[in-house]
Image (cartoon, rainbow, N blue to C red):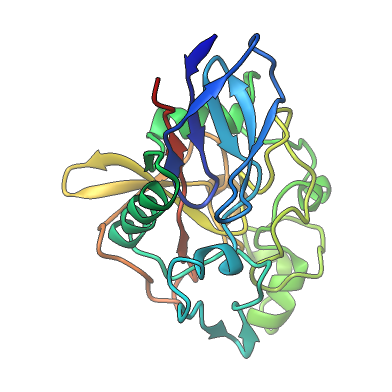
Length: 249
């Protein structure tokens, strides 16, 4: 039986395609052949990217894309999440992938992202104790503080009291997944959604420099769509793409 399926991509895009499903099997996976991005079924007719979109995957669209470096640390690793991507560039990536595959990709809505983050539970984050946060999210932790704020005592910073070894972005999938099998929903890099907020767009998830209260399933920011970076000396946030896809009949 043919079903309309929505596929959301963590940190990047959305695609539309026809899939023949015998039943609604949650956890069913799908791999895009152009970019090798993996998707996990999280609801009736709804798929989400298993990982954030990587530099290697995005460079199939823009071979010369530069995710740059910060504090002398490169953000350009093949398996690191792509950053320095505006809302409009995210949309262009989705259009490109739609053309290459014959499917229709788009960014997820804010509500779709929220659903994927909570993974069927009434939660706001995946941990209770601060020292457990590094199992699930790359946030402002002791590793980040020691490199970026070495002269500031950790007791004076809003941070998680653990250490994961990543100063900036971590390779995608380095943390434990949520109940839907999705990685890096919180922390690592902020993610675009297609939902407008006045003349801005909503971003979700927080980043490697986020305070723990800003990297939750409910927190969001409003960002101008032309933004491809912010003042890194202030808050270090950069953005990845995020995708959803509705499969054609």
